[in-house]
Image (cartoon, rainbow, N blue to C red; front, side):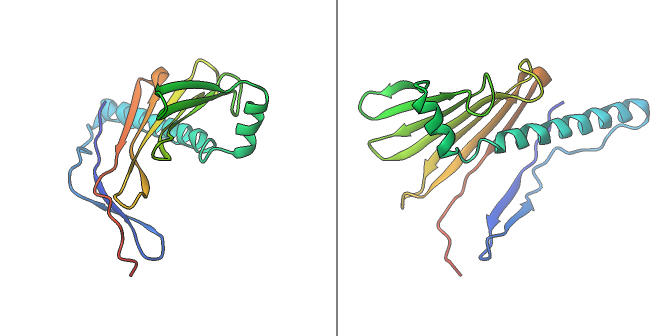
Length: 172
């Protein structure tokens, strides 16, 4: 089961997110009868699961300085050099629960966030969820999430959110 939905989104002057459907959607007709009911039940269960997974991931964002410091003080932070002297990734194991990892990739030369990754689980450790956000910058240095991917292997689920067309607002 694959579904695609495309919206144009923007923040109004008062800070409210506005979404406008662009018409590029494959949310087509559902089948009738027993088969249609089964599909609707699966969609509803999957929608509930996605909601639960997103709530879990939101508990990691933005990262909490006290939790990061606790893991650092315990000597458990992992450092992976991505590009010597320029880019690295910090991994914070057991960030909120046993067996999870929060990773932050940074470009120290540009002093910018490159990516953020959460590897956690929902109800039990076998129910893994991976959440990856990749960042980009506008010409003025403002950063934004260019792509977001949620993968839940136990449910054979991959949710991709692409962002594009960012520009500085007029402030009116």
